[in-house]
Length: 310
View 1 (cartoon, one colour):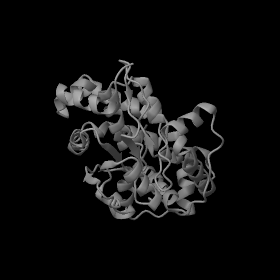
View 2 (cartoon, helix red, strand yellow):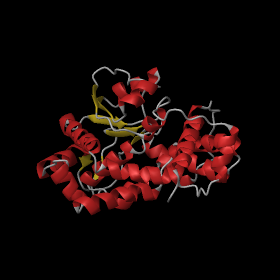
View 3 (cartoon, one colour):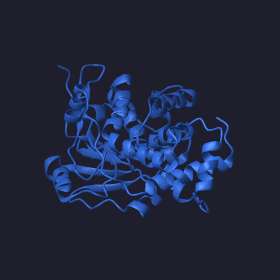
View 4 (cartoon, one colour):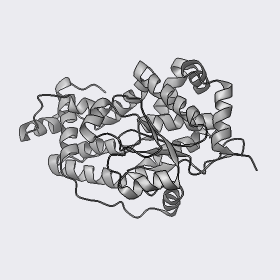
């Protein structure tokens, strides 16, 4: 995709506008039976935390199952209510809170609340939101919106952005440090309940989850299905963003592209797999030679978080 720099700035600024506009509460359309079962099976039931789910129940290729109540992937925790905190501490006995958000994410959204008995760790990686809030001097007016719509714009800027971002997680020092820190905390938890998150719980969190599920022995298709569950959990957000941008621009193509920031696409996580295989040969090589996991570490994680095969 070739796009001039002005168009890129315009669209990124438009994303910022869409992000900051007031949101009218929206609810997703009725889920299918399979989606409803997925919600029931994996949802943590937290009121103030988006995309909050348990990895428990996934089966491994050798017949074992991930334990429930141990491994949690979520969005940011800054809006947790008292009942959420109580559930994480009293019901799940959480011991680790791993935060992947950038310093700017924390500046704009707030710090994680302190939870009794829970150790907080921070392994920051820059995000799209970080980029948007450092874009200066952009003003969205009617004339600029008209220019954006006139451009030869095919509606895939944000998708391309995310795919490039997924590549960079595996090719930059910050990205690799994030994954190393993640596994360090998991090993240190010694089988205790661990929660990891970014802002929406889908990109940084989704890639860390992909690596962990691989270590635990879950098959690739199941891993991708877990990644795509974000689209069910954030369906209302995506629908609301689409409507706001459509009202602002009158363009379904632009609205669809910008609404993609509130979801994920299969090709994004496939780009992660492709990047790892291209640069490191295999996920196994990446985990062992780059992240530093030993066979002993992998066995320890599997013993801690998997039930025995039946």
